[in-house]
Length: 204
Image (cartoon, rainbow, N blue to C red; front, side, top):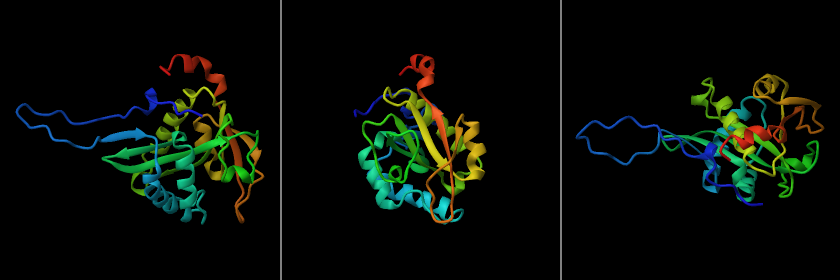
């Protein structure tokens, strides 16, 4: 599987204040940037994920070694949002090759699959309640439309998160067969294949 580069939805966004006449330009980090993650981001990813999920459900979707695993195998299916060089929100995905998720989907990447399994979306605690999760998910779905081998995105979430994903266009597929301790999940999907028109007109 080849990585698609220079896609419009992953081009860094640079928002800097205008420089006054006579003021010397200094090299600064972009105020806001979206890019794929790599293994060097793994610790920052896990710290955000651990704080976000342990306090709510007591379980992390991905442990640190699993974060590194997916960022090694399929970094192009991740997306991070950085503010002044600091990771504030992220998504990690991998490819899957079946209609429904099984326990194997939690740890495997299927290079010839056409379904993107979204393992985790998390936002740093100081940046929550600002709509960043919805914005990041929207950008990620736009990016997936530019990948010709992707037909749909799937995820599993707890009941209270279903409305959040429904607002982004996800549809329920019923209870997931996967459980983690006492936790049960709803499986949801987002069709990518049906957006051929958008793909043709998105600059992909």
